[in-house]
Length: 319
Image 1 (cartoon, rainbow, N blue to C red):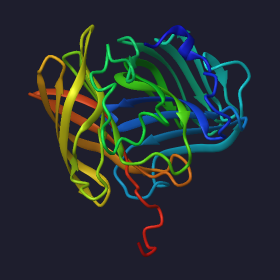
Image 2 (image 1 turned 120 degrees about the vertical axis):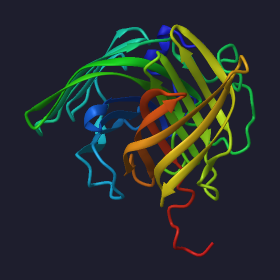
Image 3 (image 1 turned 180 degrees about the vertical axis):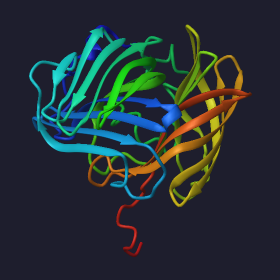
Image 4 (image 1 turned 135 degrees about the horizontal axis):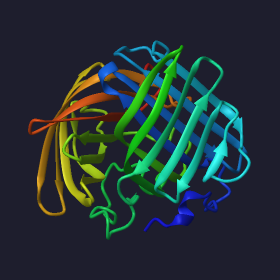
């Protein structure tokens, strides 16, 4: 169960220098095909912070050919705690209601800025709480994240409202998206072979999934690891799921997805990327990242997909 204390730094479970705590927020302007992501990875034992701000507005296979990217590898640890901090890259995050609401500001001095408020639409979804997640105690073959990088982890759907400005042009932000917070061991080559995905529909429904990815069968998601369906104020954990993906190389082209919640209700939805690009979150990390338009039985939705499945970064070496 997530408590108010979980918005602060957690005591490291070891002196391993890969121990990390993260924040991730995404939001978008669907009519302009613009997707914004703000990512923070702190490593308290090293006294260093990674932060990536990216804005994507199209489809391409080169990570530097996007609308905007501002990634720093070794920022100094901020003063204070995770409930209220500001980084030297111009990103500031303040929790305005414990584990529920946040104020995000960014201005890196490059004529790109945003000022938005995130309002949680549900309690944080603790993937390790069996009262929330029916797969919390499952030992799923191929799950590389639940007990390491996601040793502590919550996902949450929320409404993001505010303003984005890009070289003098202002965009109103008003969307439903996901944030997450994690703490655990996170080495540079550790994360692989899973998908983090959200879809938020016009009928006040959100579907959030963590799928497994098989690097030898990239046209499918073989099974679900964690996730939920939010219908208004009600949240139902997922107990099963799978999916089919069409790709251009590693980039996404189309999705056919299915999940089953604890009620036995099956949700089938399809998606088409509005943006799709590689995201190099840090060295030796490679993601296929897409912002999608979703369809759930005729109801439109929007959200994002992050596939992490670079099994071996040195692919030209003999196996």
